[in-house]
Length: 207
Image (cartoon, rainbow, N blue to C red; front, side):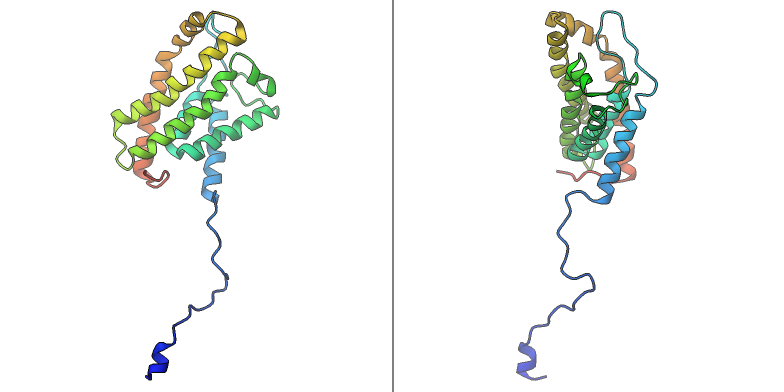
């Protein structure tokens, strides 16, 4: 082999697909996961609503779906799954517990909690990414409770007080009725998410 031949750089062989396509922000798996969890949150509203005397907000299993979305899909996809559900609700589909739907629900007593759903999925997903790949139970319980209880109550309770005209302390007392059930949802979320991340690592990129 001559020096001339050695100096000629090797060019990569052309491929049938042409130039490499830019990385997509949302892949097919992302879109499928977002749609699946939006459907899960909607399905968790099928048992209906239960109102406790003196409260303006119903007991619903849908907050469990919101926590699961953040803990399993992460901040971005969890947020988008909740957002997709809420867009469909705003369009008039009766996907909230008790068959509620329409833009009006976002301005009623539960409107603050609906906004809290979005932020809860973000917070839970953000912290979960930093707990992986180990996903230890106690830190995961704290992260899920922060998003699924503290964040939701911090937005939902003042909204109830303003929208219904009751004192903040009364709205807070009404919210505390839901606390035992919400703690149970946090525990279920963490136990389920731990098994999911063990079986299918990579759903959330560790940070």
